[in-house]
Amino acid sequence: MIFDKPSSVDLLAAISHFLDTKIKPEVPAHLAFKIRIVENVLNIVIREIEKGDELSNEVINQLQGLIAADAPTIEALALLIKDEKIDLEDQDLKDLLVTLSKNKIAVDNPNYSTFKKLIK
Amino acid sequence: MTEELSKALQNKLLEVNIEGKILNLVPLTGGASKEIWRFEVQTNHETKEYILRKGSGIEGPLAIKTSDEALLQQEVRKIKAPVPEIVAVSSLEEALGDSYIMKFVEGESIPRKVLRDAEFKDALPLLAFQCGEAIAKIHEVDVSKLDYLQEKTPIDQLNDLYATYESFNQPSPVFEYTYLWLKDQDFGDTQSSLVHGDFRLGNIIVSKLGLESIIDWELAHIGNPLQDLGWICGNSWRFGQNEKVVGGFGDLEDLLKGYNSISQFKVNEHLVRTWQVFGTFRWGVICLIQASAHLNGSVNSVEKAAIGRRVSETELDIADLLFLGGK
Image (cartoon, rainbow over the protein chains, first blue to last red):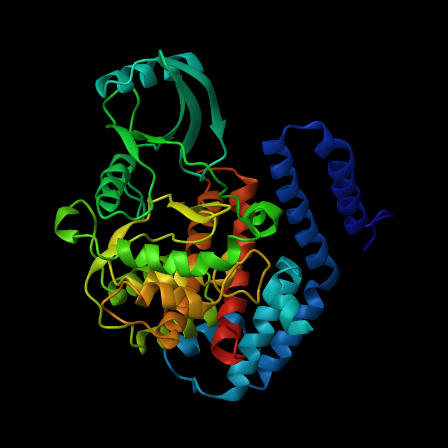
């Protein structure tokens, strides 16, 4: 990347901090609630930039062991399941669906109770 | 705007012989699609609190008309199940629009307050049994009087959800798996019953004595009643209290004790678990529907955009239930 600091993550984090400390205390409750949603969205983007590649690669690597294709995709797996062209009782398939779900939530909402329970 | 609404309320209440001044009319944060207002009526000898619930008059793919919600609650009240008392109903053509007025019920509906506030500490252990009892009564309402409600078998519902998911062109291996899994399950050979459709913490009013009222009937329909039991157990409605299967406050055993004390059809934990998977899939598809309104440009809403990233919560919950022994 040719860009100067602050990085995209730094910039988003600065907006998030600004909303939290300067705006949220000044607005009525129903808007403060929406600011919280905005902050959540910013944090999703931050986590996706920081960890998205790694989390996706882990799933794709696991997928390579499971389905025969040069460049296996989530869409291809969905189709195989839909057409029942993959053994639904295969433990590797089940493991992959767990990894996929965990890695998605690790970006979307790492505070989600089921995720916290599973990584304990 | 409030003045106009005030006038319309006053006229509507006159029709049912409540004559008084409308005071303290304030909007409450309600569902995304409904307006909810709280107000007082001052008559010669007393002041009473009421709630106005007002919809757009448009039936959604899942939601019923607000005025039908009122009719339904009047039927439910006849069999002495806990619902608010409806005072007046207005149709879309009237000044008040598609809406109804009900008596205010003292208590709390905000999930995190119910779960955390000291006031409800003694109520929480009673709540699962009470919820089971109340929803079992509701499931015994005579459905022949509810001809404005759609009837759907579990398989119809499942196929509708799947078709909706498919229409968004975002293939999910977990949802494909879930659909196949669910198609194979036994949903319980029950009678066709009134189903609340969104029976969970957030849509019940709780006082320090326990369950006071069941509200928010917009997803009501006729079908297999056990889905209400699976829905209230979904992890999405435990608000962080993962270990308390029923709504984040109670145990499944107590919910079923309450339910089976009333219901002719005796329910076991296995059936509830099947419906819990169904409900979690359903909530995932509802999240997709919400997000699609933002994605297709019909609204620009950060809330609706954000809910698209909650689909993964339901995928993880289903993976946990199907593969990891989750409750």
